[in-house]
Length: 411
Image (cartoon, rainbow, N blue to C red):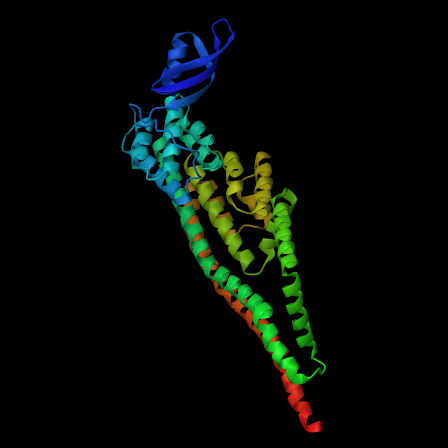
């Protein structure tokens, strides 16, 4: 038994409030309705450890559910629904199999909201950290059309494909980031700790002779970092904070995303990722019965690039004016001819969702290859830059010695 506090209206239209004990939220609302008290807001108070439905555990404020766990949850719900279980029973079954408090809390709240009379899409919309607009839109269409089990299967497929792409990108990026960090730390340690000792010995042997320009530059840099390293760190932190604030503004994000698309190799890979995600998302939404304009509105946020998202807005505006999908996409100049041809063919044959999903598989393979190329080039670039830094340091150390030895015969 749990305690609920409520705000409501009585049959005379007067505001009333109070508390009521009931097994769950739905029963509390039903009991109040039987008294002709109509709830406008109801909140759970203290719960006992468990209730008859097994879903009344009370948990502390939860963390966000990881993407991989969320994809698994969607697959389990889809499987349970396709097996013929009612929605509430499906949520209960998945709840019992959940192995983390975050997942249990999420499923607990979804079940409570559904039991209280909310639709699953509305219950998911209340958890914006865990469910995107795409998830909510697809589930709402499935509920309206009476094919929630099929739509949940499509949504689980999409979540799993998206997770695979993300993990490939993360895995490929690990080595270049490691190389960059190692190079930066190594250079700082050499300049601030090792170089002063070496140069002290060298300068003693030179007896105050004039030093070459690379040596003077390196000595100045070494002394500056030793004296003002804390200031450099503060400036870097402030610059990072300022850049992040600028990037989070609409104008900054748009400018940065445009720049990313123009970067050689990297821009190609990012465009491939966006195109694959566009094809997969539009195909999944179309397969679920969502209208094209709504699908474009939903998928713009999945591309990961505001510059491309603005192009999608332009495409949607052109479609509202009566154009097809393919022609506005071609006019943007951002999408490959193959995708545009597939969309044109899909519009003519009525197989848009099927052809888009097949094309998405092709582009996802190309995306993997493009990512691998980027992550192969980046370590090489970092190594070349590190080699140039090391050569400069060696030149700065050795040039005074070579010049001194050259000058000895003429002394």
